[in-house]
Image 1: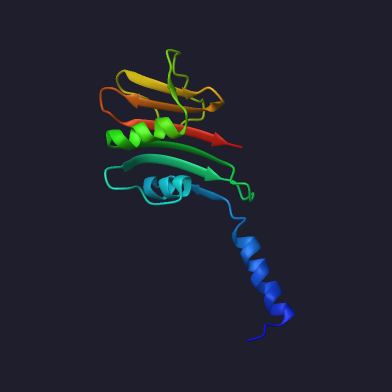
Image 2: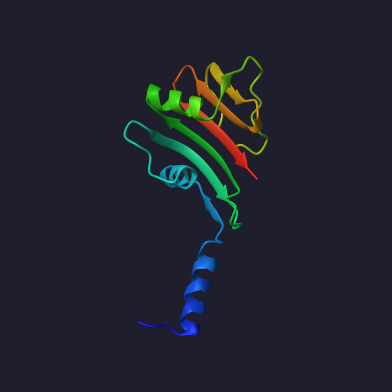
Length: 135
């Protein structure tokens, strides 16, 4: 089957325009899916989230997410992101949602090469909080 030049142009424009749509959601599972590229696995539950992704093709995004996860998932996240346990004071970004804070004490991880991200676990609830910014 042969396509005309105008049909090909329409298909190409549709692809280009749909890949350049800003994403903005506070729905926890949808935020997780946009961030990771797949639905949360069994044993991981997104509780709260706020996700923004630019319309730019380079996937610029900001995510705040609170979740519960099994220990192996947390360990894998820490390993894959080269996180180290930090003794510094946790500094929550000013524009963070109200729910993005530990209730009790916390464990705090940082990536020495990427200081625009925060990873911490509330030691009283076991909830894991992630702030990532890729701009």
